[in-house]
Each structure stands twice: as C-alpha cells, then as structure tokens.
Length: 349
Image (cartoon, rainbow, N blue to C red; front, top):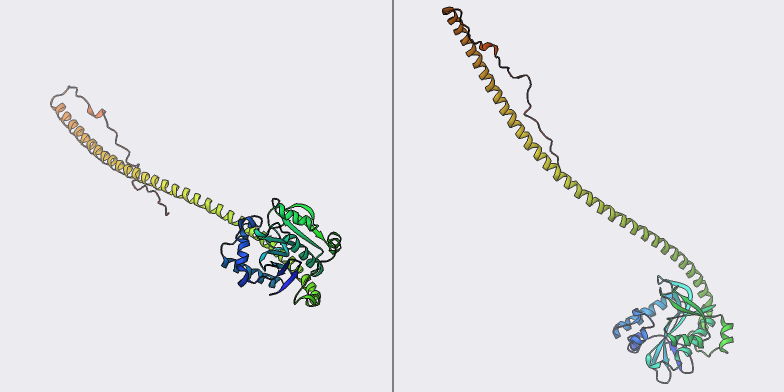
C-alpha cells in the first residue's frame, strides 16, 4: 500500500482492489453520488467495482505521469470516504487533452464534513509542486451546488460554461500556478510521499522528456483521428450513395420486368392475330379457287349455249335470241399473293 499524501484528518493512497472493492461499491452504487458523475460511473456489483479499480490502476501505470485516482481514507476510522482525482481532461471524443482537472467523489455519509475541500487542497498542492502543472481545472455540473462551493473554498476562479470536455455542458473553474495558490491559501500543506519523495524529483527530468514526446504523439494521434473521421464520413457518404443506386437499380429492374411482361403479352396477341390472318388468307384462297371454278363452268355453259343457238338459227332462221356472251364475269387477280408466314421475334428475358 502506498500513501501518496496526508492531511490532518485524511490519507490519500492507492486503491487496493482486493480489499477496497466493497467500500468503493458503497460510493459508486449510490445514485445520489453517480447522479453528478454520469450514468457510466454507476456499478451494480462488488465484482464489477473490483474490475473497475483494476482497470483504473492499469491506466495509471500506462500513463505513468503521476496522475490518476486515489482513495481518500479517514484516519480515525480507516474508512474510505471517497475518491480524489488529478488527471487529464478528456475531449468530446474521450481523448486526453493537455488540460488537467482535480475532482472528488465522496460517499453520501461523508458529505458536509469538509473532506472534499481538504483532499482537494492537498491534491492541488501535489499537482503544482510535484507535477509542475501551470494550471489546474475543475468541471462541475451546474446543479451540483456542493461541489461549486468546494471550488470556491479552494480559491478556484469560475471561467464559465463549456462543452469542451466529456461531451456535455459543464461549469469550468481554474486555479493558476503555485504563486497564486500560496497567495490564496497560505503556506504549502504538509505532505508525505512514501517511497516517492526523492525518487520523484530524480525522475522529473525524464518525466518532462516523456511528456514532451507524449504531447508530440498525442498531436499525431489527433491528426490521424481527424483523418480517420474524415474517411469514415466519406465512407458513410459512399454507402448512402451505394444504397441509393441499389434502390434505383431495383426500381429499374422492376420496370424492366413489367415491360418484358407487357412485351410478351403483345407478342402473344400479335401471334394470335397472325394465326387469324393466316386462317383468313387460306379461306380467301379457297373462295378464289371456287370462284374460278364457277366462272369456268359458266364460260363452258355460254359456249354450249352459243353452239346450240347457232344450230337452232340454222334450223329456224330470222329469230332473235338473247346474247349471254355480252355478260362477262371478271376473273380475280391471282398475281397478288398473300403472305401466310408473318412472324414476330420473341425476346430472351
């Protein structure tokens, strides 16, 4: 167990998941507490709380920049009364910014005892004197009047409303460099950094170098994130265009199928008419043939009649006979042929 800081009544130390999960659960399962922290802060079981503490410690080790979240322990009872944080504020997308915040989460039974102010003061001092931060911020929901009063007691100045962090609108407070801290709050609070004191000082140089490299990487990361978002936006636009074209394609396919259906119906009607036309042509040709036969028979009879009249005139002269030969029946024009082989092309669908 590592005690980071101490005050008259409190100890600020690292979380120990195996031992502290139940007490942390009392804090983060209380809707009166998590109401001011967001829905994602609430846990529903001791085991999930233990896992969250483990993940928090892993993130602190990954950052390795002296920031994180620690347990606030009441010296007299050794009860964990809350959490104190000092870490980088996340932007709207949850990515760390270069702004640092101080924050506090107190169990409801410890409200009104001044613990948030006491832990906040020593954590501000830690941020200024050990981490050399030029300014520290606090963000508070507008309806969280108790935390607003804590920022006032810590000497933090109100900046106004902002939606720059956590993707919600919050009240922003700030406290500048150590000179202002000492002017507002007097002498530096006594602190004890077990296992860290001189070690932290020795690592400050390396820490600053790593911070510089970290900032460079963060800048590159943000650039890549911006490019990624642009590509995602373009991808979504292309997907929308693709869906629109698919919809139009399906509409055209439906129209094409309707036209094919109509075309087949017309082809069927055309073939029926061709069949009827061929039947009528056949009937017409049959009638022409019969007409020609009757005309031939008529001509034969006229010829026979004329022969008989000639024979009769020879026998009985000076008698007037009716001349049937003056009536001639026209023969049909058989040089015109009617086609019986009309066809209509089918289509392959």
